[in-house]
Image 1 (cartoon, rainbow, N blue to C red):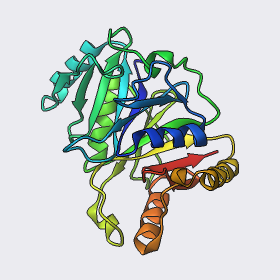
Image 2 (tube, rainbow, N blue to C red):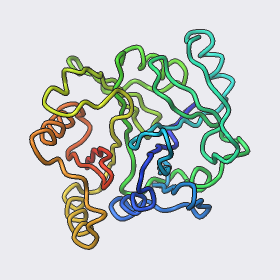
Image 3 (cartoon, one colour):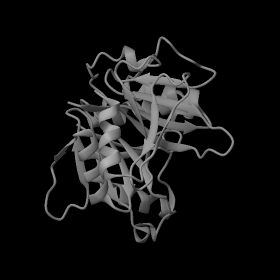
Image 4 (cartoon, rainbow, N blue to C red):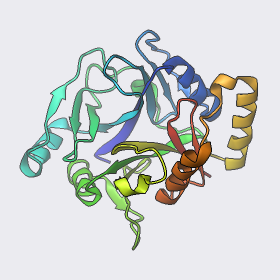
Length: 267
């Protein structure tokens, strides 16, 4: 493939604790080249999960994803020709996972790196491409123009459109391992719950057994309440969980991590 999704980024007030959740529940491993004062990076063998501390002016939550490409200049040329409103900027050399940051035409931000960029380090070099039994298999975003955004990611990054069925408003674009799920954002969907603005929506994991994950989560929460998943409690929480369940057909069980990030798991 010309491009692959190589990382997902979270901003958290409790970034070190959150990394332990993903280690404990999904068996992700911390990079040997860690930067504990700056962030914690864990990986599943294929995708890196970068958990950044929240700074002034930043919102906590699922923040963005990153794409590794064969040739950055090819991407730029495709953007110049068909998507002239899209811009990009060079990232600091201290970022071992993103050479450049850009956005799609709806303003959803993501990173781009190239395999031979000098600043690539940490889990983004250590990942060997062999995903563990519990691994990230999709990332989802909600946006105002899902059809146009699907066209953008297909045109620029050569992702393959898959599983598009009649009546399904979502678009599914695959890099051969991870699926980018593009979902419509409609304020009316949030009538019974708190409004979540458009942007990154959830992470999806493929696991060997959904029931085993449920048992593991219960045991982990009993051993360490700080790693207990955030609850979908109350009428608004139940409405959000119901929206999550009906919006994404890729998952079998919907939950949240201990920081409230939405997670979809499937067997």
